Image (cartoon, rainbow over all chains, first blue to last red; front, side, top):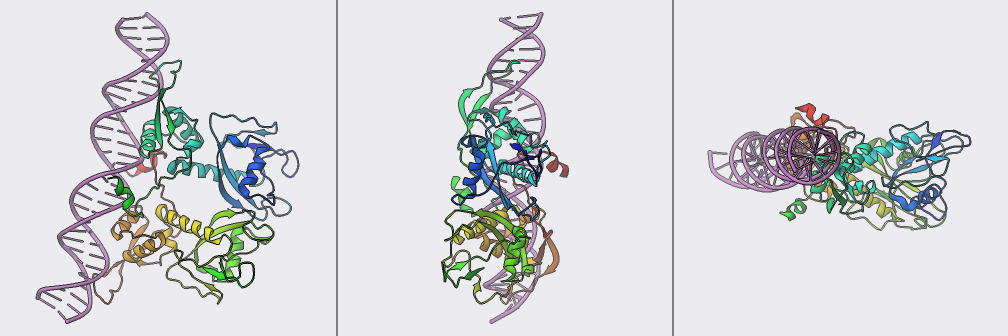
Length: 207
Length: 207
DNA sequence: CCAGGTTTTCGCCTATCGGGCGAAAACGTG
DNA sequence: CACGTTTTCGCCCGATAGGCGAAAACCTGG
């Protein structure tokens, strides 16, 4: 979500929402406050620190140090935004102000990484969804096709996915009705990849 | 590496090196400058941003926003430090100032995680080392015993480790002389854990 | 109401990876 | 030269990612 700058510098270019840090808030509180001017912050399904951008010349004039955040909104929500604000596909960003394009790239990279080794999909998916809908989400977020078969198997094996029992209504072209799933937990949970460097106990407790 | 504060607030408590950001430097340049007052910064084998700590009351007096860094030094170097500065095992920290203990915990956690899915070991190990020496390093950094067999196999399979051909001199108690290894690359390199969400091409190119 | 098209789901097979164990190799020492 | 020590290697197992095709479950048109 970007807003179009009206004034110089970088008038007419698109920039990330943000603003100065208040004396009584930490950076996360601050970004939520800044964001509340654009969208309903309750619709943010996930917020996390990204990185600090602090190059001396990143903005004209006096030095500005920015703490960038990654914020996610569920795919089934479409928050109303002001007229100077709009959503853009991260693969086709318009001309951006300052170093905001680099920030977007970092955010996208972080999202792709965390989709792979956490249950962060819950922040993108609706409460209930079909596997093929989830596949579309993952494909869009990652930028390449993923297999629905594999996606379901892997997420299930990690204990992240759970069937609701219900099925989705079939589309106009027929086909077998898809079962509905949900994420077991809607809180961030990492599934450690490598067990090399982990005491054997944890894994062996199961068996 | 902590230094003992001489003045209030938190006099006599141990704190992380750091200081104000100059107008002409970014945060990494700044922390390297700050650190140069304590140790030879050329001996830093790795530096990376950790997180921003910005709670309003984290330090007494006017608000201070800190960008924390993780910095590593190779195990075979022992930089000289001033008299008010000392090394402490991260498992047994002394009384620390402000929120510096939380920062240390985060750094330790980050190190453990990155040791597992990157080649970050190069930043801790000497240029050449035996597998059992590397095992000790990993065990210390991770906080639990790792198997030398497994460590060698996994790091080798990932293409991170490479034998030098030479062998280390044997110890006083005999035993088979250990072969020397080195890291193939001394630049940060991540080995993606999960292939679920990756285009099949990469893996299939090998076969 | 049955044949054909469509979409989803499931089972089976394979390759790779982490993990454990014990034997073998290669050294010192008494 | 037998023995203790340390390292290295081979062999095994279980878990996981990935692919493929058959089967299931629905719609529509004839």
